[in-house]
Amino acid sequence: MEKDTIRKVKRVKKRIKIHKKAVAMTAISLILIAVIIAVCFIFFVPNIKLLGDKVITLKLDDTYKDSGIVATYRGKDVTDEVKIEDNIEYGKVGTYKITYSIKKGIFETVKKRTIKIIDDIKPEIILEGEEEVTICPGKEFEEIGYKATDNYDGDITKKVEVKESDDKITYTVEDSSGNKATVTRKIVRNDKEGPKITLKGDETIYIKKGETFKDPGYTAMDNCDGDVSKNIEVEGEVDTSQIGTQIITYKVKDKKGNETKTTREIYVTSPNGQGGMIYLTFDDGPSNVTGPILDVLKKRGVKATFFVINQSDNLNYLIKRAYDEGHTIGLHSYSHQYNLVYKSTNAYFDDLNAISEKVEKITGEKSKIIRFPGGGSNTISKKYSQGIMTVLTNEVLSRGYHYFDWNVDCNDAGGAKTKEQVYSNVVNNLRHNQANVVLMHDFQNNYKTLEALDDIISYGLAKGYTFAAIDMSTPLVRHRVNN
Ligand code: ZN
Figure 1 (cartoon, rainbow, N blue to C red):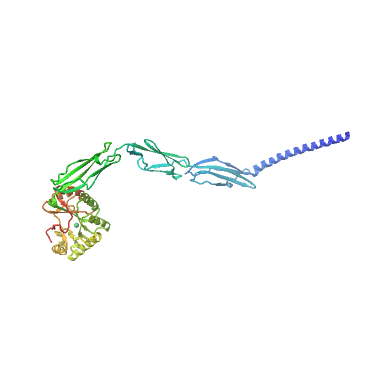
Figure 2: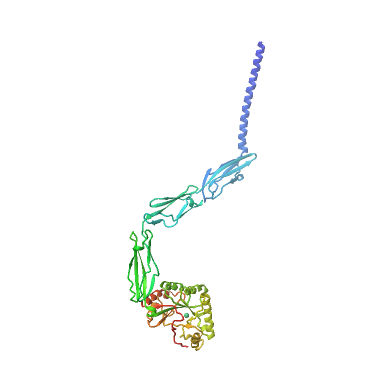
C-alpha cells in the first residue's frame, strides 16, 4: 500500500518535471521564431521611407513634383527599383493616391501618399445692363439679366440666388467646391428722364403762301408717367402770308419737372415755283458721299438730279436708291474720258449707250436726260474732234434726249475748297426769274458739298424757291457751243 503511494508520487513528480521542460522549450522556440522574423525583416523585407509630407494639397493648375522616397534592402539603396503608380487626374478636383511598392522574394512593401486637388477660385458673376439702375419711383425692378461662370463648373447661372432689397439687388453663387461670389446692383428710384415727344407728320412741312397751316398733331410719352400728350405746350404761330421759315416749338414736362422740347420747321414757299425753281444736279457719282447726300435730300423732302458715270457695281444700289426716292437719274458718261468720248460721233454714242444700258438695268427705266462731259460748251473736245459739239448738241436732241448744262456752278470741282465757298457760290448766283440748274458733284470724298447742302436748301426755301428734279418738261438750260 505504502509502496504503491510512493510510486505514484514519483510518477507525478516525473511528469511535472517533463512538463516544465516542455514549457521552457516552447518559450525558447517562440523567442527563436521572433528573432528569425526580425532577422527576416532586416534582411529579407525591403523598406520604403517617404520624403516630404504624406498628404499634399494641390490647386487646380498646379502639377505635382514628388518630393521623393528612399528604399533600402539588406542595407543597400534600392530606390531605383521602387514601382510608383498614381491615379491622379490633373485639373480635376479629388483625392488621389500615389503608391510606392517594391517586392523582394516573397516580401513586398507598399507605402502611400495622399494628393488632394482642390478648386479655390471663386465663380464670376457678370451683370447685364448697368451696375446702377435708375427706375421710376414706386415701380418694381425688372431683372435685366446676369450670368455666372466658374473656372471649374462652367456656367452656373442657374445656381445664382437673387435677393432684392429696397436699394439693391444681391446676386450670390457658390461653386461645387464651396467658393462663393457676390455682386450687387444698386437701385436708384428716381426719374431724371423727360417725356419723349413724337410729331405726327413730317418734321419739316412745306406750305404754299396763303394756304392754311394745320398742325398734323403730336404725342408725348413719359418713361414714368405714361401718356402726357395733353400737357404739351405749343409755341409759335404759323403765318402763311410770308414766304420763309417758321418754327413751332413743342414743350412738355413730367411730374418730376423734367422738360423735353422739339421743333417743327414750316417753310412757306411761293405758289407753283413763282419764286423761282432750283434744280440741284450732282455729277460723276455714285460714290461714298452719295448716300449721305440722299439722306439730306430725304430729310428736307427735296428732289434732285444725279448725272451718273460708270462707277463700281458695288455702288449700283445708290443709283437704285436715288431713283426709288424720286430723284432723276441722268446720263453723264460711261468712261468720262474726253479722248474716248469725243473721238468721234460714234464713239460718243457708244459711250452714251453704255451708261444708258447700265442705268436701265438698275432702275428699269430708260433715261433721256443727259449732260455732256465738260458741258455743251466744252472746248477740250477740239483736241480730239473739231466741231463735234456742234454736231452732238443737235444730234442728241433729234434722238429724243434733253441735255442740260447749268447756270449756277458751286465750283466744287474747281476753286471752291470749303463748304462755305460752295454755299456762297450757289446762293450768290440764284435768280428768281430763271430755272436755276445748279452744278454740283457727288464724286468720292466731296464732303464740302455734302456739308453745304442743308444750308443751301434752307436758303432756297427761305427765299421762296421751289426745289425739283429735272424731267422732260424742265426748260433746257444750255451753254453756248464753242466747238
Ligand atoms: Zn463730269
